Image (cartoon, rainbow, N blue to C red; front, side):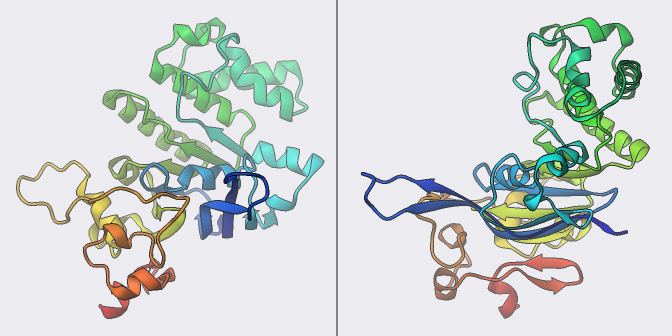
Length: 322
């Protein structure tokens, strides 16, 4: 299966103002030289703690924040270079499902208008065609036809997220970016939305870039997983390999926090310490202040993300010793 999305050496940085306006410029690197690919019809999950850069990376892919360097190719075209009409066409191909179903919907619009909005701004379809598409989308996401006339406050959290999903599907996108789409929902509702996303992916042949901090959710949704820490990808593998044989201490620590039914000692230990300030990141491997396996080399030398098993990549000096 061919790659739909290819991200190469993507970097996103933000200028940090220190003191007066005469000092040397400094930058916070929210995304630090990352690369990954998403195959058509599959789901790549990007996971990590809050502040790891996963959402910023997704926003840069969608051209919602400016990338400093690198390339983002969708169907072979570098979308970071597109402008005007080409950019408008790109907006139809990539849509977002946002984290908060309460703040991501316009409270003054009826549900039907919210779902139709991308069609109004990005397509040239007739009013009759738009009405037909919206009716079909309401049915596809499990909402009743009469609910089109309701306002967001008249829906539950899960129903609001269904409206957000329908809106993302309106332009028949090639890629949907799901940014923590269930983190604001109750556990029972989370399962319903995740099952709906999987069904829609099968029915419409969708490709997902799935952002989450929850490896339990990711295990249910993804085909492959990229683990981010302080702006860098530290491990990238298919779902089975990552859950059964994680090769980076940070991934192992994240897995220690996944709820399990088995009674007894966990296979890995949870993370200790706090995330360092992104304004003054650690030298070498960013994870070394929290890693019990850290050596002098980890403090001095940045580990490269390299293939340590078929299609399994890790950025850890311990892999050299292993």
